[in-house]
Image (cartoon, rainbow over all chains, first blue to last red; front, side, top):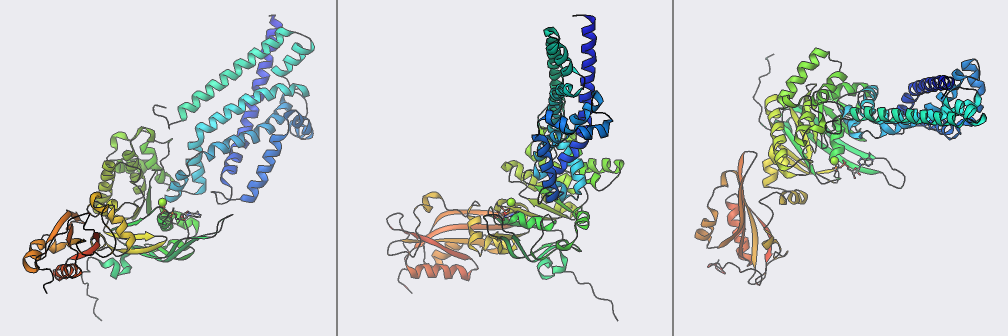
Length: 221
Length: 383
Ligand SMILES: Nc1ncnc2c1ncn2[C@@H]1O[C@H](COP(=O)(O)OP(=O)(O)O)[C@@H](O)[C@H]1O
Ligand SMILES: [Mg+2]
């Protein structure tokens, strides 16, 4: 493997990690509260707002059912508004975040819904407010599930980030397509795949380990 | 004008002076609205109930009787559709949510499945209501230590619920419920998930808290043994209504409602031995059959030698089929199941004889002659 190739791979890995980190970070920032809200705002629930719940749920579903590559193209005006440009690694963060947010929201919603309703009942019984219940009961209890969800989201984002090469975003996917496919450098393609596999393994292992450490439901967790 | 004279009040003032009731339900009705495919459902119907300050009131009922709904009305987790719920000075059933939250700090609650946070240690769980109430760290620490000591879990303070036994988890639940120094403790089947020995120790702890801290307790259960172990008063809930209520000793020894008898039958001493129950028939005895009576010995009569007197003074022979002597709410209490000659006159005379001596003799049924030999009384057909 030539030093030039190595440089390209390192550069692309850096770009991928940056995009994924930004999208996962922002996706969590927006997706976590959204997920908590979706999980607690149904009829008769803690923050009951059934109408808003329905609207947000529909938006989330619509975003999630749009294939990522179409989403990327469809929101180009929005991307330009936010990033000032619609091409490049920075611009790619916008569609990635837009895709990550509802995905993370649904995963968080699922984790929150797993929390035993008896805990909410107990917290209400000792006088906790809905906000206190969310912050002191639901999120801490759902944390292992949330961490697993975020792990899944990061792994998915690694895959999505490979697609933003199509709109001029950098990263491993872009490298693989441009060199590996278009310039027919199978060794580059192979290297990209290997790096992605290693990244996915690392993320999954770290996520699993963290979730297990947080999960006190198991003895000696 | 003279100052009002203070007269010591009688022991059972709760029922005569509802003003001293700490928890009061007045004509409480709860109807759950219709859901898709289901008609509206009235879970509680015209409930009147008072829990005296410092006492333990047990509500017993079958599954679905409305027990949980009733207890959830007391801390406002559920709102009645009719009537009033009052705890201390506050009309819980009318308070807006924010004020209700503050009132709930004065009403502790424990649960069948403990409902502890898995991500917090024993100490962390006990600290939670204090954090919610805005205590500072030092105060929380001190209070948590005090509470863990009270429930005997000082050594387990840093264990997570998954590392605790059922009984220990319920102790954490109790410590958590007591954290904000409530005046009432609500217990929703708190021992139903525990084995008999652990149940015993949890009930002992609750009784001790009632005694030593003067905490008023409202507990619900489906087991008479729980009522009997720690309650002063009992209310029997059946299909959303109170079938019977009163002093535990009274209700246990003179049950009025059929549902109460059913519950008591499951308590040892009242259920007939299978060999008898199999042979017992409903209806009046015929020639040669025997009548089965249950004699209840209460209070001062618990040790009377009535069977000897029955033979000596009335010439009636009674055979003992089963019997127990027990203690309820600290008072001796016995049941004796006997058979006597089934002739209607003998049965009537036996019951009369016992009643004169202040004893109840409940007719349970008939043992047919071919199933069980009848005792013969010498005085048959004699006036
Ligand atoms: N939220 C609810 N909506 C409709 N019906 C309910 C609701 N909660 C309880 N019920 C009904 O009320 C009855 C009494 O329930 P509950 O108080 O839980 O009984 P218990 O605790 O005595 O077993 C049951 O028939 C139950 O199905
Ligand atoms: Mg119940």
